[in-house]
Length: 259
Ligand SMILES: [Zn+2]
Ligand SMILES: [Zn+2]
Ligand SMILES: [Zn+2]
Image 1 (tube, rainbow, N blue to C red):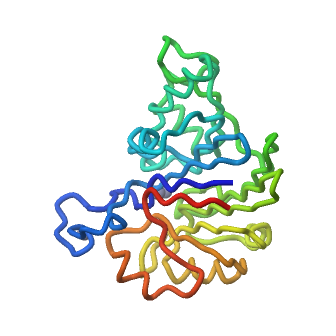
Image 2 (tube, rainbow, N blue to C red):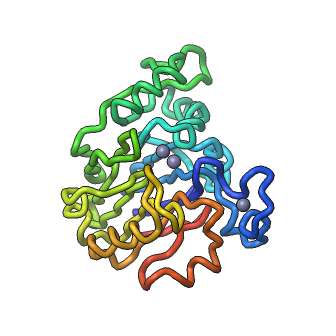
């Protein structure tokens, strides 16, 4: 299993427009963050988890050859606004609609933004086509299983994901945009080869985990390897990293991890 971190920043990205802080002016490439989204290869399946506004740039950079299914964790702008660019992957599927698994809120946002594309086939060749599906608790794919959990994200709900690859038994945990993690999700996450957690910033926040809260969740899971995502410009990679405990690191854009 392989995870491509296509973006690791919060909704405004880093640098923040017009900001002159240390992080926003940093020459360290790890301090430039697109909006959070990842691509996962599980066996022969290419799974796109969210599509940020920069999805197209990153699909080109990483030469993503195909997308078999999309999981939209929730309908916030930073996670949904790149979805029109999935049109090329519909084309490559011979115009079969791309399955999109999401929750109730994600479905409502999909219908309001991409009404023209929710259909079995593209309206016109080259247009996107999305088949909407409610994410089940357990999604069985030929290459593995995706477990999902409803997670609190302020007034919203997000899908937390635990992926288990069939051929290798490797386990990947992906909990983005959540202010807490349930005991059931922690239980399912145990023994993971890699844990990816929302770790917004040092100070607490009503709809995201702070770095300390994410570290506590990582400990509860018993994770040996954790990457934090969705960081604001308050996190300057090289400086903030020195305060992280062993086994916990900040992810950064274009990091690729093979499990
Ligand atoms: Zn800044
Ligand atoms: Zn969100
Ligand atoms: Zn977000």
